[in-house]
Amino acid sequence: MAAGAPRVFVSHLSGVAVFDPNGDQVGRVRDLVAMLRVGGRPPRILGLVVELVSRRRIFLPMTRVTGVESGQVITTGVINMRRFEQRPTETLVLGELLDRRVRLVDGDGEVTVLDVSITQLPARRDWEIDKVFVRRGKGGALRRKGETLTVEWSAVTGFSLEEHGQGAENLLATFERLRPADLANVLHHLSPKRRAEVAAALDDDRLADVLEELPEDDQIEILGKLQEERAADVLEAMDPDDAADLLSELPEDDKERLLTLMQPDDAADVRRLMAYEERTAGGLMTTEPIVLRPDATVADALARVRNPDLSPALAAQVYVCRPPDETPTGKYLGTVHFQRLLRDPPFTLVGSITDTDLRPLAPDTPLPAVTSYLATYNMVAAPVVDESGSLLGAVTVDDVLDHLLPEDWRETELHHGALGMSDIREAAHGKP
Figure (cartoon, helix red, strand yellow):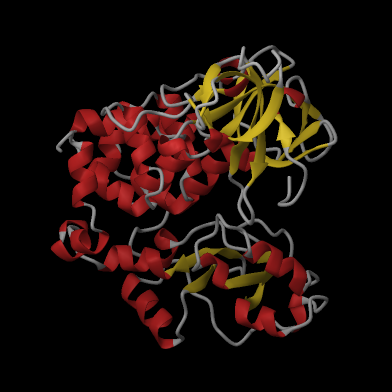
């Protein structure tokens, strides 16, 4: 649902059909999964519980939902078929929030929750509960029994987590606004038991982002404490190059077992990356750069660049290739920097503005040469192309820095001081 579109009341989503991009029905919505937050802040909608034709109920993340309209839900078509299991930090909207007795913040008595509405945040794929539809109980002489009204989420109390206690739910609510790197810094300093509790309660995408920022020892420890099927889900959510680095540190049997549990396409990308030496362009690259055909327009390219899930380095340029446009692609033709995209009319074909002069990197290019390449040409990302001329992926400056910095760089006083995380870490340990 785009920004400015009518809000959706969740009771209207119950039983709604879920379709893939080809128009084939996947199942029906049976509930929504939310995460309550401290301080009366609106809950974030994590995803949908979808019942398949086989009666199995699965979890569909909101990041995989592309449309909620006209009595149907449209997905990206990429769905994990594993059975839904509710986690301690999750709340079922239809099953647990509706018919609940709460109080109005203005002191105007108790009300019963009849429905809640959800809305998508502007320029993001995050969804929140914004309104609550309630019925009053017995009130004063001027109020009739059964009066209904719609109020802001912040106008009622009795939903959100209390701002005390040290369970995983409260820790997650405290950590929610942290960037993945900052949350990783906090987790690194928790006890192993508390670290496992928080990791188990994070959703797959959030845990994947955090794992990418943790030292290898912490990554292996956390992954090893997850159920294998969930560990595979988290690896799928990680960037392929980070997943490959993590898997390469595991014993061969564990590595193969997890790769087998992953979705075949995701596992294929990771296996391909693991074939290269770690400190080479092939070992450093991601297999998911923005790839466009030469007949794509500037408008098409800018739409891809706007994807909020892309890092700034990956969004800095697009790579123009002959089909197929999934890595490894057809013939690599060149790159177009986003600044050039901003200078040309939207209908311009990217093939006509492609920079063909900058030579790409070979997958066996060693790390020092990759570093020199980025510095020489003032680049934040570089294409990696094989001997046949196919684009294999792109090396970004953040991955290069990860391999240039000392292994213990996260332990430096500069890193801790810049983040200002000491108070949060103490709270996580239960210290006053």
